[in-house]
Length: 296
Image (tube, rainbow, N blue to C red):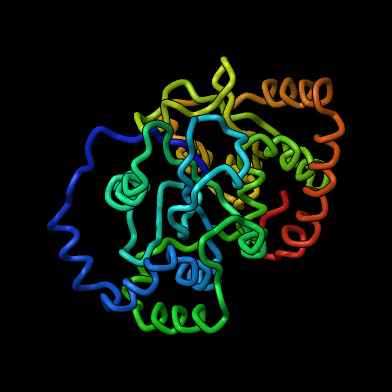
């Protein structure tokens, strides 16, 4: 779960049975109350440090415009999420749909918005201090949260392990949408692996609003000789990578990737070259020094 926008729903589903189970297995109510009083920022930072997963902030936004600056948004909740649909919060491990309906929409409604929705954005830890949050993390409170989290192994065991990629999650996320083209090209240059595009023909219902080109292009990867795929998150089956974008039906196209590269060179060459240089540095620092990762 990396970044998205959702409108306010007409109603919020209740899952009382699941909620009771989570309460019995979860954190002490007093701790949850203290964390939620500060938008869970200290809990989220502690969990991100432990798991390596991404810090997310859900914002109340007046419209679906994508580039609204944070100064015009209202912070609702800070939490940790993976590169799929998983959310890891003080109230348990949930899907983004359950978390949005059961937690975030309720917080948003307290502001009595007349229009708009929720905008999710991801950040590295250092960036939190420059955001217009209501509360900021402190090392003392992060330490308390860390101790509480480590005392709940059943909670940590329910969180999927971050993929084997050594690249920090924030940078891997940056190269998941749009910038993936530059990462794939840099990886091709440094390893000799073949680049390819994933073209989705049919999406799952939750991903039908995914931003994509008319031909279904969603992502660029490199393909290993054994048919495995690789992107900034590391090595995986291409089915696994495509499923991150909600693909029910897809195809792999080597030609389409080259068309996307040429489009970037024509329309935004300076930005593309800058991202290509950053990708080369990340791959050299984290990927090529990782002896567990295939190179051919």
